[in-house]
Amino acid sequence: MLKRFKTVIQQSPLLKVTSFNSFSVIIKMITGLGVSKLTAVFLGPQGLAFIGNMRDALELFHKFSSAGLANAAVKYSAENKSNSKAFSSFLSTLVWSGILACTLVMAIIFFFSEFINAFIFGSRDFVFIIRVIAFVLPLHVMNIYLMSILKGFSEFSKVIKINIASHLLNFLLFAILVFALDLKGAILSVVLVPSVMLVFTLHHVRVYFGRLNSFSLREFSSPMLKNLGQFAFMTLISSASFPLVFLGIRNFIINNLGEVEAGFWESMMRISNYYLLFVLSLLNLYILPKLAEAQTKKGFRDIIFSFYKQILPLFVLGLIVVYLLRDWIVLLIFSEEFLPAADLFLWQMLGDFFRVLALVMVYQFHAKKMMWHYILTDLFLALGLYVSAVYFIPEVGLEGVVIGHALTYLIYFVIILSIFSKTLFFHRA
Figure (cartoon, rainbow, N blue to C red):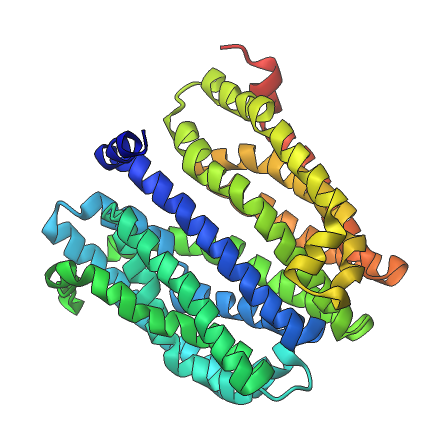
């Protein structure tokens, strides 16, 4: 029976990639839990808060230094992979745009390193690590672009292998540097992992070295730059706002409640990411392609209601189980010191419920290229999360941040529902 199952998997590329991706998700969860446990034991809530700040800041640096062109690289490498001249034009425009953006961000990070350090870490001195980021950033950008091109070439197995290696390397390097350098080592590992990962990525793209060397300044294309600019606009206006908002909320908690409380919120955010990982993977793997294929409003409506009927009850059941086991989960992932975070579960999970309700419909923005709907609703969401946190935290303490989370996602869901209400409830064709 097992042999037959393995034969079926090997004969179906889609099943092979899907099962491989599930394995990658499991590895990500296990290594993520390991990193969280090490952080809890050796660094405590304060350490977790500052690592969260570093991750959000690095995500911001990645967005701007790559000019927000990761998704564009996927699209245009997929469209032009069979046309060497068009691919060379795309690659040349991407590379020279990336060089310009990365150089500018490197200079800003290096010359304003003390200001950036104060914004991320307050009075703690990690200026040296901020300057390290400036020097290794080109490696990060190269890795981002190469990974995007692999996706565009449909090399999904290679992408998943690189991701698995990244998860394992992250855990290994984090453990070594935490033991050696404490909090400074933990923060340094966040910066170094993407740099080292370039070695693995180069190994997997080596068969394409000939094509990837085909860029030149002569092939730079103004029309292609205009196309790339649309992606950059979407990414930098919308996606980059969330790391900035989370940085702002975490710093607001630190300044008004303390570093420990910021660590409690960060631990809640990590637990939320763990239980959302499976449903978000399902949305990416199943719902987005289905919505892209749907040609009628009835098809869209059927997909949405099918998800609500079949998947949502299981998700709600999972949330109930997580809530009932919240103390045990906090102890398993973190430590007894983090038990106050258990008080944040109810409102966080309520917000996550409305988040999933909305996201199923939001994927239609991506599937049908509804750019302005995507940008404006994302900006509302980011602003709402920050404003609600700033308002409720002084009123009710740390629980205010998750109350704001729940309220913002409720309003966000209502807005998304209103956009699609005619299609969902009043249109029968």
